[in-house]
Amino acid sequence: MVGQSAGRRALTATAFLAPSLTPLLLFTLGPMAASLVISLLRWDLLRPPQWKGLGNYAVLVADPDFHAAVGHTVFFILGYLPLAFIGGLAIALALNQKLGGLSIFRTIYFLPVVTSWVVVAFMWKWLLNPSSGIVNYALTLVGIHGPGWWTDPAWSMPSVILASAWKDLGFVMVILLAGLQAIPDDYYEAAAVDGAGRWARFWHITLPLLSPASFFVVVISLINSFQVFDQIWVMTGGGPVDSTSVIVLQIVQNAFSYGRVGYASAMSWVLFAAILVITLVQLQLQRRWVTYA
Figure 1 (spheres, one colour):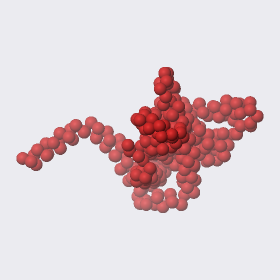
Figure 2: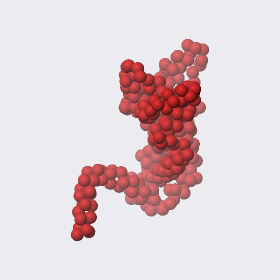
Figure 3: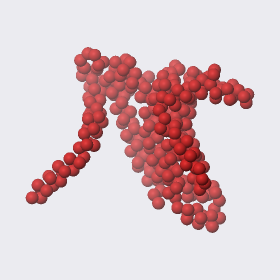
Figure 4: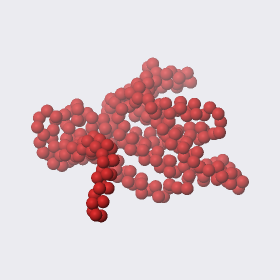
């Protein structure tokens, strides 16, 4: 009877979970397993695949183009993450006031988040146009000769970083603003009574109690940064001189432009492993700096 009852509960749970599990298996776990198998093959989508084993991974280790893509991706992360976090935190602090009409500004700052990346990328490509863009025109008004932005290898990645941070400021702002509003006013009042200044209250109360929201923002932003693609595809196409060729761009090019599907799948799994390891490290390190009130 106990076994029948447990089996009946398992069937009931499976029936309720099936609407969610079926798409997960068909469109996520299934393709992931297939890509793992494909990474062990030599396949161009036209001819029958050939077994290659770990050969794709061996080539990947010695591929200078992949090494350069890893470096460009890391460069993007190091520029984007601090800019998006600090900018989002500044906006969240500014909007965390008990004033009327602030909801309008919150909506305005969040609009880029729900806007298509293609639209945002084309807008920033126009704004940063070296010859006719508004940004360089504004710089000439103060006597500064604007750079080549997305046409200059030295400025192409900063151009992408600037556009990416601008689009994601609203997302960071919303999460951090929710964290700020969850901090009780009693802490600030007690600190003010003890003579703590504004900077001391921010450093010893706001930042520690905001750390759970900050941790979430950092983890999500870091995962998304490793997968940067849309803005680069539209703004630079990986150029000039491959200065913005990142990992996901090379995956797409190898799979659909060069017909190296197995090699592209191997790249995908290396990227997945890197994201997984870094996320697990972050989960371990959170014990040292995340404070749960």
